[in-house]
Image 1 (tube, helix red, strand yellow):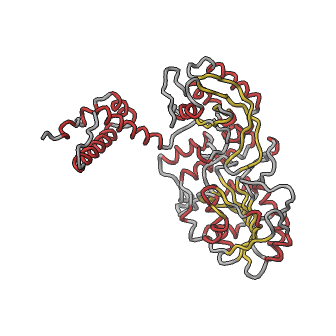
Image 2 (image 1 turned 45 degrees about the vertical axis):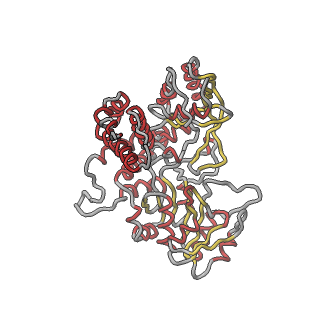
Image 3 (image 1 turned 90 degrees about the vertical axis):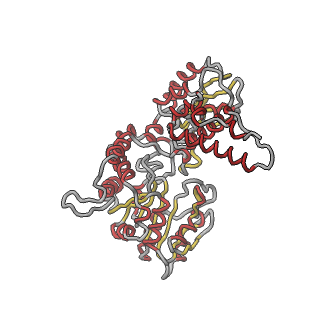
Length: 467
């Protein structure tokens, strides 16, 4: 009986197929060879272990298997996308894009050695965050500062260093959960603190904190509810009153403001977001906030406040485990330098520039894009749609920003297939589906990306993609 495996094509035969040749150009020869050999080995194993007659795939079937496998792997890689969702701080898309100055600084420092922990004046070992501390103190008015890899780490460190083994008093209305099942009570447990809840979900007064204070109290904690709002019959103790109580009881006042606004956003119609400098001025022992949200920098957790408190935090055993690397240092330093001039920051930091782009500008851009797409053979309707964008990233949850989008429907594709087609572009475009049309919201699209919206959908015949 003839061995069925004799009919299997060789690796070289398969590599000569045009589809795999294209894969070689896109990825690499060795990667495609490895996938081909893996598929062939799988076929051989199935044939040799099969109880009866086993199916031998044709060369075309093997090629399709290899190509499909590699396409799936490529789409799983992190790649540049156009954010047309209308969510400015989209966590799934990396939150705030970095300023060019930050990217240039990363490129310069990452390709060469850098004075990460070296004092160039005397050659001694230096502080990893010394330069950042100087900038943060200048911009916020704080006595000292340090930086860790995210704000969850900042919260854990501050709690552990300033109130470890003791009670931390917090309002029931501030026991937050954010993305990834991060829950404040669990962070307190990890930090070695005991949670002491006061007040009710909707009303907590300063007297509630005062009655809860005792000999085991280590800190008062205020957490800005960045991703939800309690309104109506509600009340919270002011930061000023909490700082005064903390001073009277000789305990730390930890203020976790979350999103980290260094500028006043009320001029944009965005209310209720605390500013870092206001927390510092009120006298908080430490103020905690994120670097990659409203600040518009890299992912990190920033801690500013009293000198002795920052010193205790930097000496905490977990500090090394959550320290930042030189790329984060470079990006944050460059971003903070831009804030020395507010007009410069608004122009250079992408998030701030997008926030300040007015509706009239968006309408002009939308009109030009619609004209370019109106006769597209795969689109049934193309129109300008007035809509609302959101901040996202756990910031300003109930507030919206006027925006303009391109509304699209397909001739033969469903709206989900059309959305998938845009995500499959050479530079993927991620929009949102609403009212049975695909919306490409320009509030989150950089002006130099407009052409990518026009070029994303091929003008030739394309098979609808339902995935």
